[in-house]
Length: 232
Length: 302
Image 1 (tube, each protein chain N blue to C red):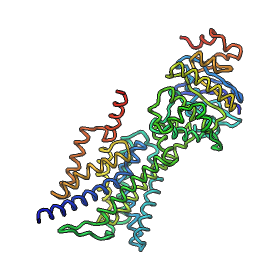
Image 2: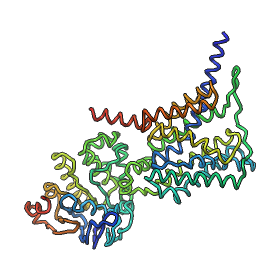
Image 3: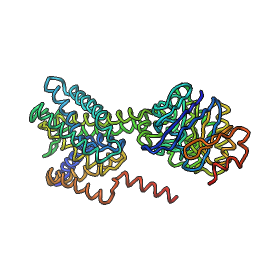
Image 4: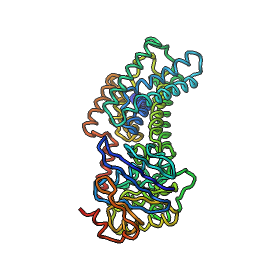
């Protein structure tokens, strides 16, 4: 279940944002994409997810060419997506939001028990409208929703954004545990240093729409090297 | 005793008039409300969709089919027509409210002219089933004043169940709330739009089928009869399909029925439009839009 991005160019309405992106995420890895606001991190995840049709290059997952397929095909191929700002369906209940997540993967297995085990608050509030929950709870729901269908790869867009620091820590730990227990590959985008250091095994730094550095396992602890790409 | 008995009879007559008007507004509105509330498209051909339900019922009926079976024909015809129109025309106009109105208005003209050319200026009317109930000096149609309002309520209850209890309904609502995220959760949103439009069209067809024997003459311009009331009810009801339709139909019918009962249908119709204008001045986002605002303000204060 390798994710293979090669020569990827993408943008909005003819304005190029991503230029010649190449990288690979191996089965079971946790890889971070780091960079400042506006360098193209979210655009990259959207292009990988099929929410944005790439101009050129390719996106392959598990050997399958998904480059120009719509997002629902990506989802059914086993890619779970946790959007930036969470984007839960506010008018649906917590439980209904999770039911929607069953559409991810091949529909064979569901992981309600495990999701409720990670995030007990979701079971307590199963019948509450998702829009009435706090930012951190919505983030848990967005992760739970992407997890329920049993994805092989999880794309997570800035899990720390708009979430209070104590909850950020626990969400980081949850993502790590999901990776260890299910072997779910995780590709996440982040600019919060403690999340990057706490979660990733290696990461790519992105600036002006291209990958400018790969930071390996040994260097993740090096605060100064990471800050180069995060601090303005 | 005479004045009292008179007032009981007239109250009954007023109640039946209300039910008649309520059933008509609900049934005329639901199809339009679903397509507007769920997809943001105002289908100005809605009256012609209903008309296809009328013709789809009247033609097999005159060819000898029993009325209930002929009505199924009307529903099927409008549903199929809706699927074709969504795939070929409406699909290009999502989130383009004004453009969608012009395009569907054009479609309305084409449909009514085609019906005129193919089937002539009118079809024979179908007599209303179920007879009348007489009380004192009054008489009301059982079909229009009891059966159709009951069907209208059943349709609303059924829609509520579909959109809150079924997998399809929940996926449809997710698609409406956030199409991009819905797609990322594996939902084929194009298919959801087609299905939702088909349901709206099928309900228009059902309305046409049910009113085919209650219209009197069946002519290619009857679509506008339905469009005016449904348009007013959607605008007054606001974005929430079921609660909006129910509350708008309830309020508008009270005025329409009272006006019609005391001063005739013309005044009843005028009162309906007057109430709509006043309601829109006071509640620009309709009744359910106002209720949503009020809820959000209350939540913000907590």
